[in-house]
Figure 1 (spheres, one colour):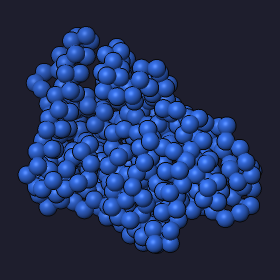
Figure 2 (cartoon, rainbow, N blue to C red; figure 1 turned 180 degrees about the horizontal axis):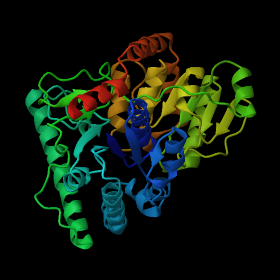
Figure 3 (cartoon, helix red, strand yellow; figure 1 turned 90 degrees about the vertical axis):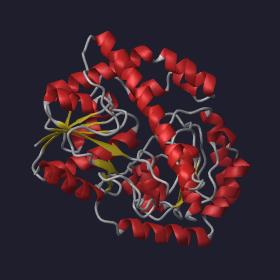
Figure 4 (cartoon, rainbow, N blue to C red; figure 1 turned 135 degrees about the horizontal axis):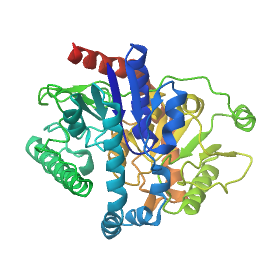
Length: 414
């Protein structure tokens, strides 16, 4: 079976699909992964074929328009207007990739919302893959964009219906606008979050330990577990290896693929907090969330390192709260401090605090050295570390999420 995995976004949106692709290829399927340009090398290093868009997500999120969007609603509206041309180009390239590959099955991130239309056009099937617990109606918890506070079954269901309806409306408008400009006839409107031709199968790729599957989910919703990448050999740079060997496990701080609202201010807060708590630290600059100016014998600065290699070697993790980094830090039983910026990040920060694996999240707008130092003290408290360690053991004991997803996909094919 030829399978196209279509995803868009940061590394946390791409790496789980690569992990699933490796499992599917191991079973003998032909696998192609489509993401934005900067991930082509990562896909190919994993042994998969890449057919990527020309657009760079890293360059996109560091444009003035996208940074303005972080400032509030008015900035988001201006950015939305300014990005219309680029979004149509992105949609056009996704369509062209799908037509070129003509896969039997498309597994797609919600941002790859044209996938059901592509499947219908090429005679294949399309299955959505969700990395957050908010794309199916349930009374068990509210939609992740509204936080973690249980508002009761009725209100919880309404929150899902409202936000899913808004998502369908927005993506439907974008699809209609693109098809008009591209002169492509999409035909009868499809539910872009429901897949196509796959008997309603929808994959929810997050930890069932962190989010037990609700009893009231509609038929077809399947929790697979997170698509963890397998730890791989990594030859650390000599400076990193020497720093790790020179003292006790450090605290990792990195905001991954998130753009920096004020990287120098945020880096200063991290350095001040580490000094105030007497902790060594590794600062990962990522895509600009933290600056590289931090210095000192107890601080090591790098751009990035594989979390599967680095996180087992640190004491605690400070990060932005994306689904991928949250799952990875909890997987290795590390106390976790979430400093959210947008989207699902506040939700994951609240979940970490709820299970006792870390303190309450600190929004990046309110990040100070004093606030972060208090959070570090909570994170390195033996009670917090014990809860995080216990939760890590439970996640590592879960069945393999990639294998469960592959089983469901092959069962559908049969």
